[in-house]
Length: 365
Image 1: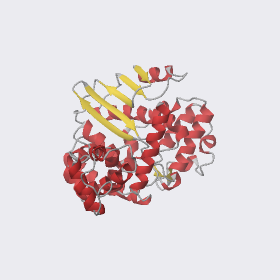
Image 2: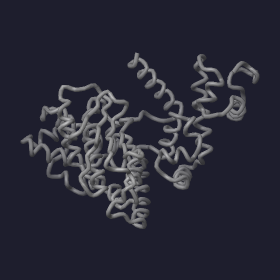
Image 3: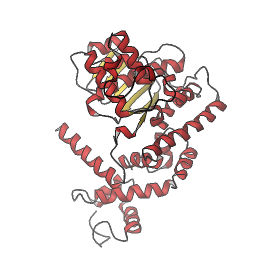
Image 4: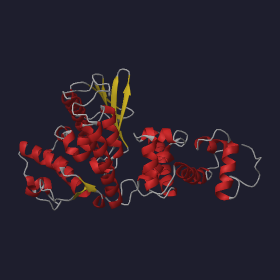
């Protein structure tokens, strides 16, 4: 039943993405630029394990001596081919942990240095939400602060499915290292959550992280009790952070433009998944780890206001949901974030010139 529910949810998400005018979340991997840092880390790991460089780079068109070149251009298709080669030749399904253990915050380029000079660990992780393409991330990264510590989670994988486990291992291992870089001392999680079945090599995770690892969890996450998220990185500098952050915004837009992705499309997709939550600019800005002012400015650059974006997502989502006869108009209105069906009816008439179902505005809710 769980698999059927997940399949149904995936189908619904694809239909919603299509109705919102959004492409497939994975897209053409050869069209998406990638950073070279993970490939360089994989080469270093291969040398330790006595795996030939050519074996790692087979089929990528890359040469080991060119990986450190400042002019090299790599795409996700090449990067993921390297990961497959690494898994095959190492014969170690948990090798992603070792690769992630080589990826410090400095491997994130300018955005990584912005994190190092940010005002707090939480602000630093906000950069990971704002510049995923520029950082070469395959996951959405989220940090949550609580009274007893901080949790860093990953979700919404945007890569090839056959190497998702490798990618998750590499990402979480790197995030552990990045937290340490930010606070200026080695930090290890008190618990690791993995949303997968317990593998036969489960002991590798406990050995790597030195803590309890819980499989079949609701999400992939690192739970820290030794870090609150409010710590200030040693190199924090507000003036430099603001300047570098602005530069990263420009570069993220350039990377997004290279694959036809606007910031507004990312915001639209997020809103479409939970309109009841993201009907306010405050909620959306918070989820994107930015101020309302920054959100307004980013949308304006795409020629939109928040209200126009909200209306567009609501209209398209309403049309999709109303195709389901099992949902009442009241239920649709609730999913769209309206406090009462009447407000939804008025809005739907404004968008389409007709009532949600039929012409009788007094039909059964």
